[in-house]
Image 1 (cartoon, rainbow, N blue to C red):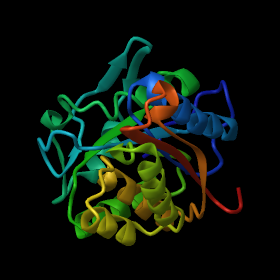
Image 2 (tube, rainbow, N blue to C red; image 1 turned 30 degrees about the vertical axis):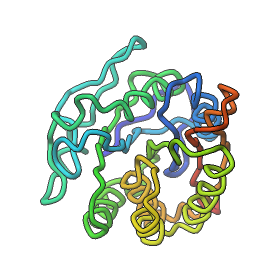
Image 3 (spheres, rainbow, N blue to C red; image 1 turned 135 degrees about the vertical axis):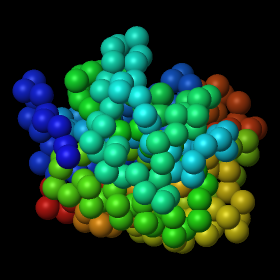
Length: 250
């Protein structure tokens, strides 16, 4: 179901996962850029699967885009319609209403377009704050469709919101330890029990399921910062992290 990588750069040799933030570029763009730069150094993906957060609560639990393309000032990126249709089931539905007012995927798209070109197909997916079985099933379905395709799978999320810099860094370190352990169940349960303010837990959980299924078992925190690093105000910050997922065999 994957498209063909363009000839300008060598294709990725295997799927790659990335967690990247989606705040305003002056605040989180450096952290996101560090993660995307690492992906670009590995090669060009055949498709970019963009797992967005759910800030509005509108639409299907897992929403797929019915559009044929998504546009930014850099150009139009085609939505992979075959991949989209293959994922429609009892949990996932084509629901464009879910993407209205939701910025978490739109912030990622210019990185993909700039580094890999507007001809690289995309798969936008808005992942809600869903029950663990729903996320587990969708992660399994997504991994099965990816198969051996050299896909880039991005989970778009910011981390702790509106705590002091010191508190945010401690909380985010714990969450990142769970992510590095490829533990989607533990990550989600602690998000709920500790009322963490991570805004894309569903997207992260799906990526962790995919990483486990596709043996992307070499996770690495590429960059971490808080908004206080940009503003100088450390009394109330938002945390940002880029995490890369690759295979041990490279």
